[in-house]
Image (cartoon, rainbow, N blue to C red):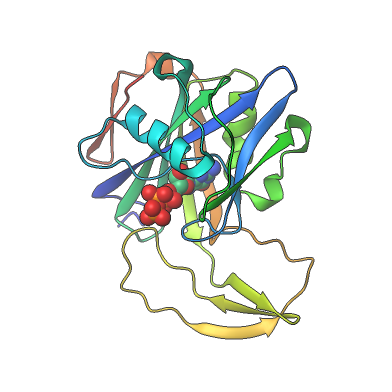
Length: 225
Ligand SMILES: Nc1nc2c([nH]c(=O)n2[C@H]2C[C@H](O)[C@@H](COP(=O)(O)OP(=O)(O)OP(=O)(O)O)O2)c(=O)[nH]1
C-alpha cells in the first residue's frame, strides 16, 4: 500500500505579501498550533460557505490585520501536502499580493515581520518552501507541487533554562496519536524546524497546461483563480 495514498483532504490557503519596490516579503512567526515556531505566509483552513479566495483574504486579515482588494490577490499555485501513513492530504492554495490596505499588526497566532527577499529565513520555515517560494518570487508561477512529508520522531515544543520539552509530532489531521513528552538538553544550534521532514517532491511550473480540475489519488483538486 502506498504510504502517501490519500482518501480525503483539507483545503488551506497561504498568502505571500510582497513589497516589490523594496524587495521585501511579509512573513509571520507562527506562535502556536500547526507549524508553530516557523515563519510563514498567512493562511489557514477554508471555512464552510466561503470560496478559497475569500478564505485567503479572511485569514490574511485575521493574522496580519491587512486587507487586499479582491482583484489584487493573485493565484500563485497549488500545493498538495502528503504525509506518510496519513490518509488526509492538505490542498494548499497559494496566493501573492503586491498591495494591501491597513496597518500590519500582531495577533495571538502570528507575529508579522518584513524580510529582505535575499534573507528569507528558510532554515526556520517549512522545508518545502525553499522549493517553490523562489519560483514564486521569480514569477515562475502558477505552479503545482506535490510535497511528500515524513513525520519527524521528536519536535521542540518549549524551552526553559537550557532544556526543551519535546513531543512526538502529531499528524496533520485530527490525531488519535498520544504525545510522548520527554525533556532533552537544549542546544541553541538546533533550528526550530517543522515537525515534518521533506521526503520527496514534484513541482510543475506550467500549470496553465493542467486542466482546472486536477485529478490525483482518486480525489479532485479544485483550481480556482
Ligand atoms: N509555507 C508553508 N505553509 C504550509 C505548509 N504546510 C501547511 O499546512 N502550510 C500552511 C497552510 C496554512 O496557511 C497553514 C496551516 O493552517 P492552520 O492549521 O494554521 O489553519 P487555521 O489558521 O485555520 O488554524 P486554527 O489554528 O485556526 O485551527 O500552514 C508548508 O509546507 N509550507
